[in-house]
Length: 253
Image (cartoon, rainbow, N blue to C red; front, side, top):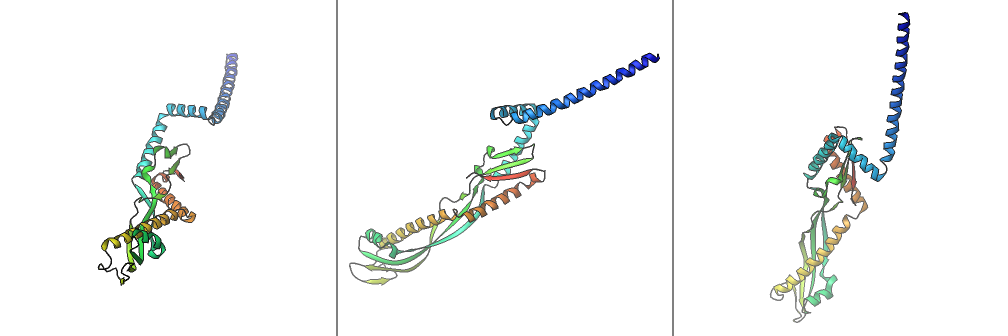
């Protein structure tokens, strides 16, 4: 009986030793496969296969990512147009700067000396409807949301140019040699006045459109609008940061 107990105790030690060896081997294999998968995932084709396998083996995680992407898209696109700057621009058109062009338009019958002041309002921002599903990337492993925003642009494509003030609108008839102040209809036909104002309106549109185009090209102004957009989007997605996500924002230039 004493012999049997000693034999059982010896067998128990062997069993425990085998168990520890098995656990050690299992740990080594797990570490080895983890390292191999990590480096294989860096290879584009193999990485895509591993990603697909991961989604297949863990569909719940994939559903979570898809649901968050849809939720983020909905929250952002609800805003529509994100206005970052609204600017009132002003410019002056002097008929004396276009003497020869006006002479041709008026068939050499009249000269005009006038100053016209024009204004236009321009809004710059981001059309958030242009954000697509591929522009929102969710990394659940790092709890990170990446947003690729469309570039900042002029939101109102049809710029409304308004003639706000008129100064010294004086016409002179080349035929009669008379000079009248205030463009009296007796000496200046209505269509002549309309031709002059239409010409000046078009020149003002060209000048203000150019000013509006170059306004956004200022590096400082553009950087300010980008910073404002990032701050707004981060505040909009604060519900996700409160859940532990970090938010990264970039612009598609």
